Image 1 (tube, helix red, strand yellow):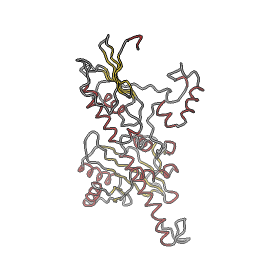
Image 2: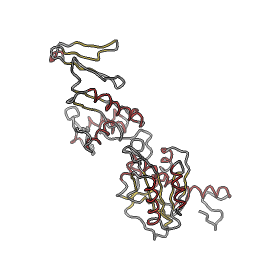
Image 3: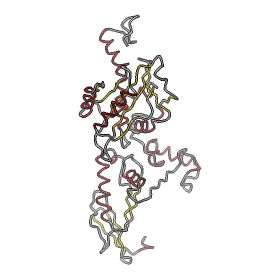
Image 4: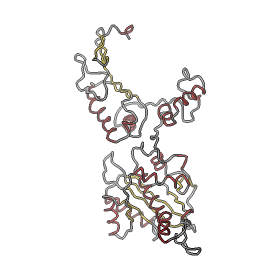
Length: 377
């Protein structure tokens, strides 16, 4: 830089330089952290004409909604206003979360709410073939890439840092390889059919960033060790007000859940309890499910049923639900995952866990029988 643009003057403090002043060009380059205020930053009479934001987020900073909102407000309220009419903004970084700064900007560009260009440059494509390598000058063979991957060690870090995939933290709850699929529902005429159940997670705000009302339905077959939960395709996931939620559930109960054995499960917290009571007043039975556990614990309680194949998903129509399940902790919304957890846990308690507790109290054996002839499952 001295050869091409010098001489220049370094400005800084005891910790090092934070500005380079190019007197012959009347220009300045300044470095700042996100904790520093750059409001009103000028060089002579000029405001900055270029901002480069490099890795302003790390993995910890994207873990909470509060932290993600803070960084977004910093960009929109501190950085951009510090520029001028023609100031350019370049943001560089990895994709750390579905709701990260980069993903928010990407969504705004896709929805034409802001002008810009979003580009991704993963080292390899989805197949991780060497032919797709974007840096052949450094990685001259597939062995060079394998050596790099071995040096990284952690698979999540490899996927996140080099392939630009959004990977949840190491405490991921559900893994994609656990998902079992079915080709078609056995049908309500199947001899093992026990009913159609629904798990409901409601929200009332219609704001853009608010949660969704989610309803996941499943057909239930068998019992005990033969229990199977077939998730129906196309779960409901919409922003709805309270009256619309009430009418929607009434319609589902009257059209898709017409048998007395069918069940609606609603978490009995706050507004959810009010919805359950309103349905009851109008003759629609819904069971209030009380849970003191957080969403992660509730989802983790379903993991064994998912991995063992008790829970099965359609090959098409549940892509967003599965994305929330395997990406729990990094997904922008988790409403369908929560409705799913309510549904599956209530079903397991009804057909597996609760009978065993009852039998245990009555002195029954581990197989779920009070005698050789009486099955109370």
